[in-house]
Image (cartoon, rainbow, N blue to C red; front, side, top):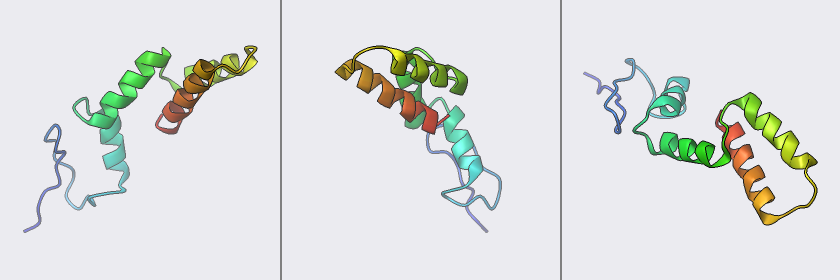
Amino acid sequence: MTATLTCVYCGMAYPDGTPPHGAKVLTDHIKGCEKHPMFKLRKALADLVGVSTKEELLQMEIALRAMPGIGQDKIVILNAVHALLETA
């Protein structure tokens, strides 16, 4: 008998045979599991930046790059936008 892989945060059971890491079903679940710390972190970062969709993030990056000056706040927001784009 094999053990059923489950999310330790919400208890959702994954399909039989799901590997414990690297499977698309796992990453897709993490993106939507409201109890998972990465979901919470991504939501907090999106709330801080003010946008969350890939299209909005790309538009924000273009707008930020067009703004004059290179203040520390601008760099921090660009880094946040890039982190959100990598997890979109």
